[in-house]
Image (cartoon, rainbow, N blue to C red; front, side, top):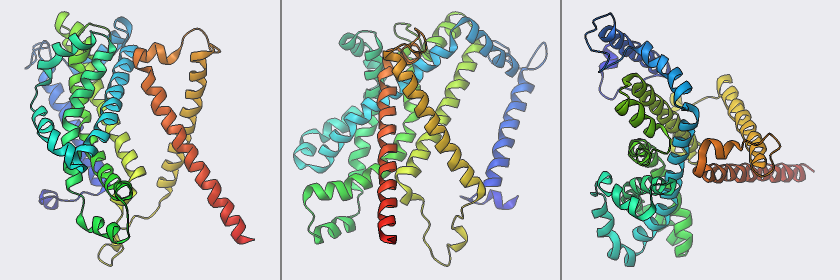
Length: 359
């Protein structure tokens, strides 16, 4: 037990599991004790009983179209992320690498961080109306004002050793950008993007409260504030937290997939005990992830075809669930398909070269 109180103690997987489960159980126990009985310590109007929150999901599904509103929020969240990243990366690299743009726009990027997002909601309504596009651009702006300065900082943090190395090898400016700056910066801002997940879910509540056009944020306003259903509010908040955790895990998986060098352990005698060995569990998980990926791609292609040719009925799944943000699902799935096709092609070429070598 004393070891667990050491500063910056590195926990084993078993310790993380046991302590994580224990923390959840302790939290639930305190919650139950505070809200149990006919005259609870904390009134139901302030903190409902956990069972009442669970039954609130049934009410939300029956009365408030929970499934569709959930997917509307997911689509809006993803759309805001995609728009922000597509703008932030080229603009951030231009400002961070080129003295002309840094001198002209660095002060603007530093100043815009202090703009309170809730105060500019009216401007976005004037510019884009109260439809989905306004909400997407509002979320993208909320992510963008934090992401842009981070990209510039990450560019400044690129080690001079790498730059001197490629300069010695005779690399041109564009080669330096593609071989040093871009890989280094992208591997770093992937962690920053994970942190910004919380910001996107925070401001999605503000965006969806405008116009009352669906989404979890709209449900919170309608059921929580107008109807006084605190149990439904807690149920929606827990759902948002679960999606946030899941989204964070997805970003962590993508980070390990695209930037595996960040997780390599140096092969030294001191670190030999830390080297990871491949277990049956790792093999099973890799197989499960690949299987789920291919099943998801197959279902996507089936539903995408149904959007054009109604072979499964008149309901177009993506339009029904995601509304005007269905485009971001198609965009992301196309990227996944291209990535899988690239990997499959590289694997085929490698196998073919090995076959020729063996001959």
